[in-house]
Amino acid sequence: MLSFLRRYKVLDYSCIFLLIIIASYLYKHLYSADQYAMDRFGFAYKIILWSIRIGIPLLLTSLIVVFIKFRQGKLPIGGIILFLCSTIICVLLIFPLGNYYYNRATRINQKLDMYHPFLQLKPNMLNVSSKDNDTLRILCLGGSTTEWGDRVSNIGWPKRVENMLLNKYPHKKIEIINGGRQWYTSLHTLINYQVNLRKIAPDIVMVMHGINDLLCNADFSYLSKGEFREDYGHFLGAVTRIIARGNFIQKLFREINFWSNKERELIDTTHFPGLVSFKRNLSTLIELCRNDSIEVVLITQPTSLKKFMTEDEIRKCYMLKIEAVGVNKRWSHKTAYEGMKAYNDLATKVAAENDVYLIDLASNIPSSFEYFSDEVHYKDITFDIIATHVSNELVNFGLIN
Image (cartoon, rainbow, N blue to C red; front, side, top):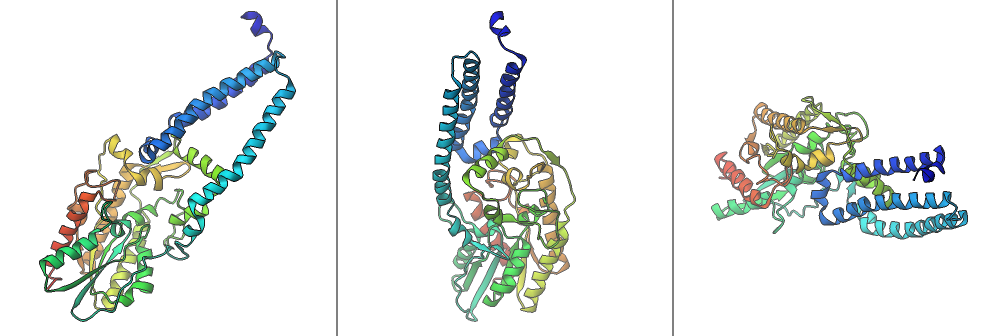
């Protein structure tokens, strides 16, 4: 053994040690991958991850054996060069094929058709006919928590409210229009209402915002491009899917870097500059509706966030793992909780200051993952609970008469 060790110089040991250091660095990040990724992407992600985990030690061992064989003179330099050239050629051949299927899978042209230069995503194309005088038309505005339905029927809470009211008042003509759109903040809704929705002449406008406006405060995140701006101009949101797309190799490395359990500065804050914008947007929307003699109902955003959460609960938080995280920083669950509370409190205050109706949905849906799939998106059982509370409140307000 000693004679074997004496054959090699310091440089040889340094090369082997360097290979071990590089492999260990990669292995550490991949072995301690974010558990949320494991939960979210399921079996396929685990197969890929474990393949890489097993592959790194095997590759390291192979490289060390090749290096030792080469230094012993048992492996000619020509053979190594031929192997490296063959590997490079294979990669060059695989790259265009992989990139083709990646482009095909991402359907880039179809995605481009989804985007709007001012509203990030195109608003829902509402096929709304002219309204007769006997019809009570209610317009629901908000983000994905307004737009989306359950997994079985894809029916959201606005349509369920309509059905409940029609069953209760079969002699009335009640029409509820879902104008919610995923990713939309109060600013998107304000623009969309003024440009596209005001002309449909609703009698009542119900507005629920909070989560997407809150995310704009995380200006260090992958969804932003600079410090917070009151006009949300720093927030790229949905269009990051186009801007930061890259080819499939860039995507692969970006995902590996993102999902590795990287140490980031944990942000604990109660300072949310976007509250100023949120109040302005809601107040302006109320003013526009008032000018058209439209009743306004503000709704607080229900959430699963609590002041104290278990590690298992935090693992289920999509926003904290995806949207409130950047290269070097991430929000704590306490920050997200304080932020949602601040936005709901402000919505309540805006309703009082402008003398409009308020449905405090946040206080009537338990903050539990029994009702939520992440911080704010509902499980199937929650849609009927929301619809029941909203429909009852509309009746209690005297808006259904």
